[in-house]
Image 1 (cartoon, rainbow, N blue to C red):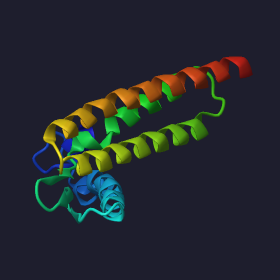
Image 2 (image 1 turned 90 degrees about the vertical axis):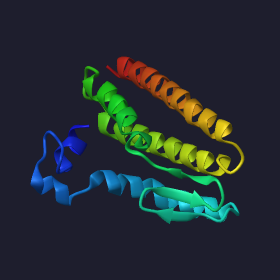
Image 3 (image 1 turned 60 degrees about the vertical axis):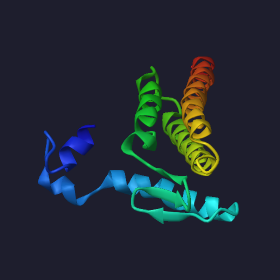
Length: 152
């Protein structure tokens, strides 16, 4: 939220220098293009555009800021960084963030395809993702912190 507030010319924290660097759109593209490629590879006719992927007819997704899993990644990052000790944090941060990205990419692909069948199914997939990712974060942190205790 702070980044968006700083990069939006109407934002409370507007910093003109940051308006040139749209990291949010760059992250959005990191989901859009793989989604477009995979959905097309699965036999659906899909088209990427600036905000998402569309499938002719009722299908497709618009990837809003809340769909980028940034908050989820921040929660995971904070859990690892704030845990006492300094053993092997960087590799685990990279592994965890990569897993969250891949789970989110899978969610976007599933929601994109499921919108061609039913909006209810697409909404259900959206909700299930949140549960799956938070369970992943809790389990990953549990096993990582147990490893930290035994290594100390």
